[in-house]
Image (cartoon, rainbow, N blue to C red; front, side):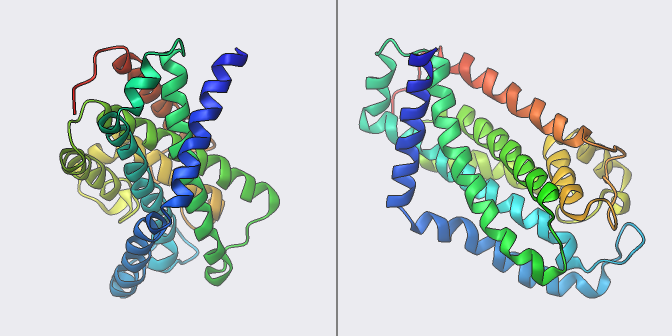
Length: 261
C-alpha cells in the first residue's frame, strides 16, 4: 500500500508542478465562465424568476453554475495531459513499471481534480458581494462538494482522453458531451421551468446533481430547492457515485492497449 500511494502522490505532484508552470491555463479556465456569468447574468436578469420564494437575482442563481463551468474547463484541460504524456513517451515509461494501473489512473485524476477544485475555490471570493454568508460548516460542505464534482469530471475526462488520438479530437468530443451536460444541469436555467422532455434529460444527467448539491450547500435551501426533487445530501451521493463509476471504468480502460499517438 505504501508503494501504491507513492505512485499516486508522485503523479499528483507532477500534475501540480505542470499546472504552476502553465499559469495561462488559469486565465483560460476562469476567464470565459466569469465573462459568461456577467454578460448572460445581466442580460437574463430582468426576465428571470426564482424557482422558490425569497427572491433571487439571476446572477445569484447562475453563480454556482459558473463555478461548475470553471471546474469543467479545468478538468478538460488537465485530461489533455494524458494525450501529451503518451505523445512524449512519458506514459509508456510509466506503464512498463510494476506500478498498479489503478494507482496511475488515480494519481492523474487526483492531480487534475485538485487543480479544478482550487480554481473553483478561487471564485468563492465573490460570495460576500452576492450576499452569500459562508459559515465554517457551510464552507466545508462547499469544499467537499467541489472536490467531488472535480474528481468526477476529471475521471470522465481521463477516460475519454485515454482512447483519443489527438488533442483536437479530444476537444471536439468533450465539447459535444460536456457542454450539453452543463447546459442541462440546472446551471443555466431551473429544472422546474423546463419542458417535460428537457426535465427528463436533466434528471438523468449526473451533473444536475452536482450543481444542485453546490447550490444547496451555498444557499442552504433558503431560496432554491434541490431542483431535482431530492432533499438532504442525496445529490452529493449521486455525483459521488458517478465519479467512482468513472474511475472504475477508467481503470478498466487503462488495462487495455492504448492507441498510438
